[in-house]
Image 1 (cartoon, rainbow, N blue to C red):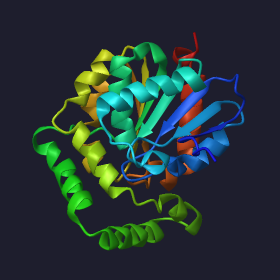
Image 2 (image 1 turned 45 degrees about the vertical axis):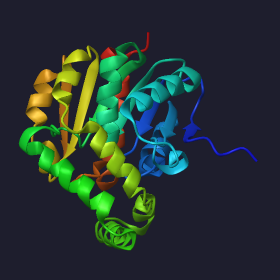
Image 3 (image 1 turned 30 degrees about the horizontal axis):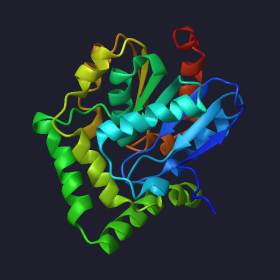
Amino acid sequence: MPPAPPFDSTGPAAAPAIVLLHGSSETRLQWQPQARALSDEFHVIAADLPAHGALAGTRFRMDDVVAWLSELLNQQAGGRAIVAGISLGGYVTMEFASRHPEQVAGAVLLSCTAEPTGPGAALYLVATWFMSLAPMPVLKAVKRMFGHMLYSQEFAQLLTSYYFRGGAQGVRAVLWQSFIKKIRKYPGPVLFINGRFDYGFRSSERRFLAAARQGRLEVVPRALHVCNLDDPARVTALIRDFAHSPAVAPR
């Protein structure tokens, strides 16, 4: 029996495409509420990043991730799509958009407006250390505890993947690079979405917004880092509105 593909594809195949990229240590299930809701009028592709989910056996190297994502768009989205990424997925989206702007109709960047350089790198170094060295039973217990504290049982179950070692690979791949510079290279429209209380990852949101040539910032009230699950309806509506904006119209 062939292995399952590392993505879910829903919605009309001929419709404008939206690709969804998850955060560190998660899988494509993180985007389930948005994938379901947006598939009424878009071709939604929720993908597992390398070192996570169905691609857990593949090492996370940014050059390889960019090449893989380009091929995914060519095969599943006619070569061009809106790309939305949260946390690690957002940094992948910025990297990809800077290298392949012709394939990105618009970029939606959630919970990723902190530069992984200078003092801000402390956030990433702590995360890398924790995910790489802490015993797996401890990591799993902490994640389960916070998941059930913050979310309903339905949403907590979407965050029960334990790809911490792969997540650490992803975090290391973005360290010591300026993603504000990458945003400056992308000429298309960008929507930044942050949770109101995600203070660490909001630290440079105004600098990121200023760097975007066609940028817009939305802050989700009462939301933390995983803002797409803190307020699924709000985030879905923001992505839908962005996809309908004239600047994102497909070629």
